[in-house]
Image (tube, rainbow, N blue to C red):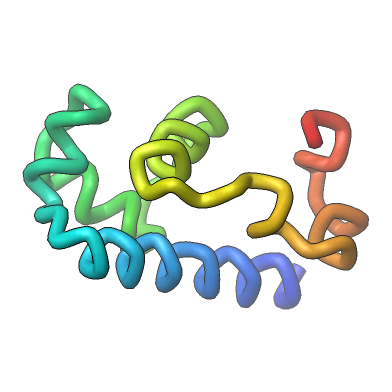
Length: 84
């Protein structure tokens, strides 16, 4: 479980970095997702769970390829494996 938690935190860090690279504010991302800035901030920090549709919308907005993001080892450990 620690490996999954560590990988999740790496993914959340990458999301924040990509958002900053694009110059997108949390408010901008929140608006694109139809949620409040506070809720987006909590998603990005891992304080609240992120569902798959929201995760995919964020990746799409940040032009991140879903399959490239998740390496083979994570796919094997992840309950999302069936979706991928």
